[in-house]
Length: 196
Image (tube, rainbow, N blue to C red; front, side, top):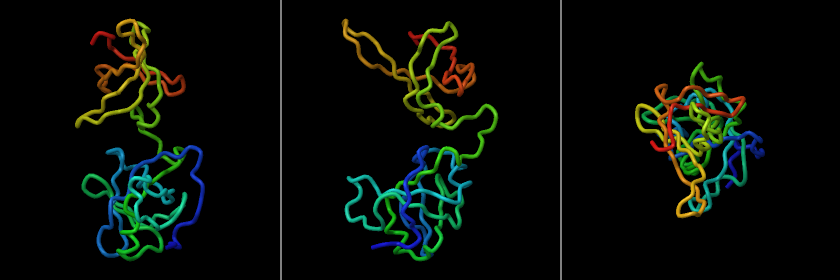
């Protein structure tokens, strides 16, 4: 099955996966989006998305398109804990249902500018974290939402029984513990100690 609204197109070099299509929503071609972040601003601000089929383990019976495609977003709006969207030339439930599990990408360069003091999670991944004394705390591997704020999940090298191994450290991403974030230097400074 080939859907005409989907134009084959390679993913941009700076493409970031922002969510997935959960299912059809209504009968007029809308789809329900499950974003990977509570902040859907980048998805809502962009009129062009890049889509990829579901991962192999979820793609059984998927035949809406192959490879990476570009699609024009006709309408999108926040809904519950995600968003709902309708693509150009998709106007029936059957076509929308065929997109279940599809992964949604946007180029990082298409994101709206973050307000002062706020950061996109993708920009924090890989930053080195140091405490006020300059001691390395680790590298940001992930951010974990915990309700009112996020927690930095750091990966660092540790020695256990004389053997080196990777370990994990978590630091709340709040002003009380985070002194500064320098995206250009790829560094975060925190008020934290290694024995916390």
